[in-house]
Amino acid sequence: MAEILSNGHSIYFDTALEPLQAFLADQKYSKVFVFADGNTSEVCLPVFQAMLGDYTGFDLIETDPGEENKNIDFCIGIWKTLLDFEADRKSLMINLGGGVITDLGGFVASTYKRGIDFINIPTTLLSMVDASVGGKTGIDVDNVKNMVGTFSLPQAVFIESSFLKTLPEKELLSGFAEMIKHGLIMDKAYFEALKLVDYRSVTAEQIYRSVEIKHEVVTEDPLEKGLRKILNFGHTIGHAVESYALSNDERSLTHGEAIAIGMICEAYLSVKYCGLAEQALQEITDYISSVYPAYEITEASFSEILALVKTDKKNEHGFVLFSLLAEIGKCEYNCKVTDEDLLESLKYFNQVYTH
Image (cartoon, rainbow, N blue to C red; front, side, top):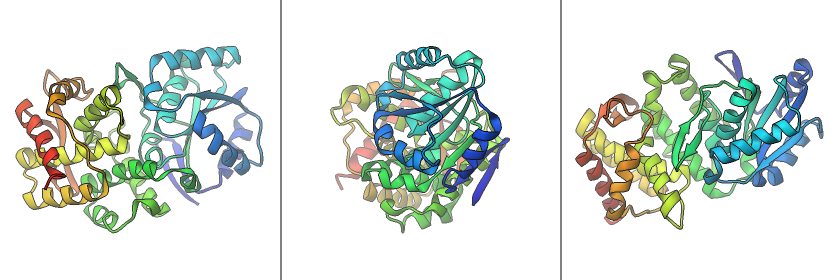
């Protein structure tokens, strides 16, 4: 049974939820709630219950699936539901689902009556290697991602790779982008190993390595004052493109697809600002474009994407700050980038799939 101890809470791997049963018995919570979306409730809740021996000592709170529902209106609905169920400060929320559920559920739990305990059980590859770990919660405001949130640690995280069997290929591909990012920012050997892997068949060991990398960074900088910013590689542009697509595009991008776009753009910027070798840029571009589908960022969208980038939480004193690669496996942060170069990176991305 693999386990990582992280800032006083445990991240468990493939335990069939056995420690959760002991935890629930020991803590004697007044009420237990399972928070899930409609898809997770249908597909993953039976797996969860089977692992716990058909445990029924919880109330289900269900929300609609999708990033578009990760907002304050849905929070208010969930808070009111908790009130209706007479949830007190000795209640527990178990977030069972993908990144939207762990982000939204963690935020609701950390703010309800100034905070109740919560546990994350990620059911997507993306939430296993990223959203459920690290103590960030958040909701979107006017399609600006995670604009309101807290740093609040779960009591525990349970990563069960068996949930991956419930996922469509598109969701596996989405989560794989964060694994690629972990290799690019911290571990060149891991990146090179991932290049030999089919995203449809990632292993528990590879998931563990991604969580290990994120845990190492978060432990050193839990509140994102310095090193933790490197986890944002690909996200400054990626989040802006994702937000734009959510509002304007009939085919909204998954988070991973958007981050893949962001990583190509920000690798381009890395050459200009951090000395990334042209050969490394080509290697990153060739690989990511071989895995992720083509997507056109129209020049008509450039100004709105630029405006969205400027709303990024990491910006300071009017400057857009990026985390960029000095080399594969080494990332720097707080890199100031001009608007002109940012737009050039979008043009570079558009050329990738046309050559």
